[in-house]
Structures are given as C-alpha cells and as structure tokens.
Length: 104
Image 1: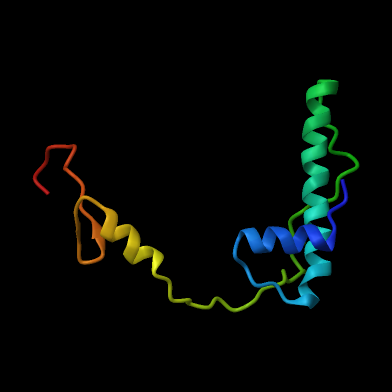
Image 2: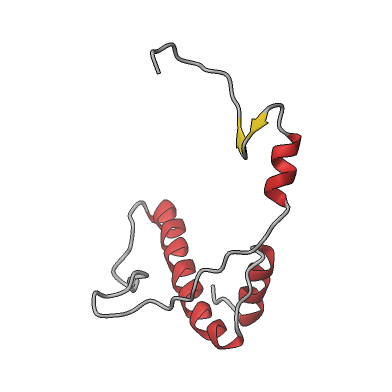
C-alpha cells in the first residue's frame, strides 16, 4: 500500500498535528515504509513465516539525524475539563482511594 500526501494530511488532522508542507514528502516515505512492515506481518499469517528480507529498516542509521522540530507547549482546556469531571481532584491531580496498606 502506498500512502499519499492526502493520507498524511488526514492522519495529521485526526491527531491534531500541524505539519508543514515541506514535511509531507518525508512523512509519506516513512508511512509507506511502516505500511510495508504491516503488509509483511499480514503475509506472515498467510505464509506461516515472517518475510523481512525485502523490507528496509524504519529506524534511522547511527549517522542519520531524524527530522525533528521543536516541542511547543500549547494551552488546552481539556486537562481542566477532565479534572473538573473527576470525582475528586486536588492541586491539579486526580485523588484515588488507596488500594494497598503501608506506612507511606
């Protein structure tokens, strides 16, 4: 299965990720490689063995630098809404009943 630019944009939208146009081509290649691994696993069930000889590695070689971008903190109201819906929460954490006895 070949992954298209449209597929990558759709997955990014579902994951609520912003992907720059210049990142799309690289992601198409990575997702296509991942799908090749899934197809090999599917064939393994049919053939009774795992044919990995024709697959390229998905991981980067030791001298390659993976495409990285800076992490950005984004404000979200989801955390507050989840804590507000919890039966008990204090100082930004869920409060749950103790399940083990101990001195702690």
